Amino acid sequence: MAGDGIRGLAEARMTLHADDLAGLRHQIYSCKQCTSCREWYWNDPHLPGFEPGVTKEGFVICPIFRHTTGAESDYARGKVKLAQGLLDEQIAPSEYVVEKLFQCAQCANCSEHCPQTRVEKLDPAEVIRAARAEVVRQGVTLPRAIEVPTRRPARPRSLPTRWISKGAHGQTGAPLAFFPGCVFGHSFKHQAVAKSFIALLNCLDASHQVLTEGWCCGYPAFAAGKTDDATDLARRAVERLRALGVCTLVVGCAWGLRMFRREYPELLGRALDVKVLHAVEFLADEVAAGRLQLSNPWEVTVTYQDPCQLGRRCGVYDAPRELARAIPGVTLVEMVENRENALCCGGGVSAAYPDLAQDIGATRVAQAVEASAQVILTACPAGQSNLRLAAARSGSRVVVMDLVEAIAAAAGVDG
Image (tube, rainbow, N blue to C red):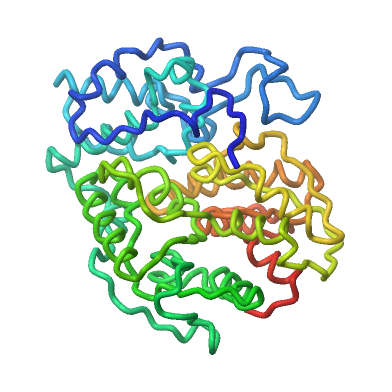
């Protein structure tokens, strides 16, 4: 379900995969230097994504700019200028340049608000990613915290399945499949979310298979500018899905959805013959059709954190809110910046710049508290982790949990 979008970013087909900046010369030079990627100055009452009565003037767009020194290179306009300098060989990929290029959460709020995005001439977030590809091409050693995730396995390897409840493995060859990927499989940091979703599949008595071979969707490599590696992972993943007979793939990770749904067709040059859904989309359809009953009440006020890749890049705004409202007793409130305007949680820079990430997360937690929310629901494991850390560090009592876990509790299933 796509949102209207400020600039229709989720519907735009400008995703770029050039490994050299020369292919983006026109985009880079189309930047009007207007600072819309830094602060939103225009008071347009028709723009979605703000609570009623909130002015659209003076809102800081870039989450990095909010929490750094405020230098030109701390937001998209300056980072696009760095890309131009690399393109024209006016600057070298110094340690400073690399730091500024990777101090970008790839949240695409800059792209959502860029006037040039409206006419499909510029996607600042993708220019920044392409500049990363350029420094990688020039042999720059990336910070270890960024480099390590890009090496996740291309060849499937079996994951320990002790975290999958007995009888939950599903049926080999079933057309419906759940993809744990790196987040639920490789790191094992979010077992509860995967277990809850599998329990819901069992509750629905849906014939399914759990893909317990731990390949990576390729997002870490893709975001780091390693486009060739991401393409190789995409090719291997699609071949494996075809071999397993998968027709519908459900992922629980916002980054994974972006890769399978939006980037794989671009990277591979062909449409996927697999329908790809995020878990919240799948569950929203099941609840709407009456196949999944939510009968356990939960008297609580919640707010929903829009994951950047799920929202701005894939246009999924309505399904998670419909799910939250379907839980008996739940009151859903919106944070001041929501949907297309949602503030990034900081998870995109949490690996290499944890303090910066938690500062961003703390701002988002404060917005939840201001909205009188007791619980922040999200649909992105990275966001869940960073918001929990930010809440703990700021001393907030707000609870952060994945929407899938909340639905499992409302359905009375035990993961």
